[in-house]
Length: 430
Image (tube, rainbow, N blue to C red; front, side, top):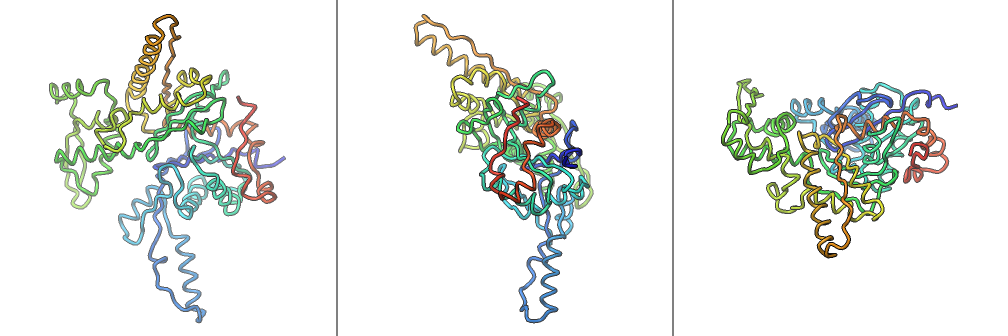
């Protein structure tokens, strides 16, 4: 028996904004780390010298080694880049896809050795990927994990499938549904039938949590709030996470704020980083206008004007007809940007309007002779949805089937990185 199967698997959910890492069997990740790397560019930018002299050659070699070792990730990376201009920030993942594999490898190295403090040879690993990830990216991921970290086994799971698995209970595991995954850098609407992603029906929209933050920042700047420029984005992010909510009617909400400003307008207090002087600013309409970009995107940008409920409806309508009712019945929210108060209620109500209007139009077309059965629309919200993908991975990696579904080091050595292009589904679970 492989001794690594007796130890808990390592679950790493790689996100554009944050990466969640921890061990299988836990309810929440051990660490939530911003997906950013600060590398020391002073070593990389050293002038090239002739390799004729051994001392010069060794100096160049040592500089290369130091460049590989001298880096920071997460909050440490932000702190280091502010205090030392030699450290440049790199974001390995953009819009859900790995953009810089060298930075990603460094990031994983720190996650495994500095945060989890485990030996990768003694554990199986579950990594997550975007539903639109290319097969070549899976090969790169497999090469890094098996060649650099020498992991015992590897499973790469599609994030929406794990988000569905997050609702797993001992009595029922509903693996048919639509996952609305709104992260920091990407929003995907992914239909899943019996644990299999319906790839041709995946929809993605160019609005995510980062855009909400930018919009809040823009609204506060336009109103002339006295926030230090170097802190404006960070303040906007904290305002979004602390005070933003989803309103039922945007016009009524404006009227509420205008009638009772003392009740709805909040105060943000902070200190200027350079002088240490305190400052305060008002938080007004941006409280409900921030999340509104998902329902009325035209208030933020003119390039994309399709509301999120309409995108979800198009996604389900493009799926096979025999799965549609089940998909409408189980719309699962995932990601930190779905955590706004009443977000799921607004989404369900607007989606229900679209579906009911279609049924009425259909009945009118047939002259009322045959009436269509009403369609149940249900948007599922649960407390764990911020970490739904990671928790789903934790649940799946805790089952005995997980270890048989993983690609092992021996298989990788025999067949090469191409084995990572596909991953078997857990037949026993569904």
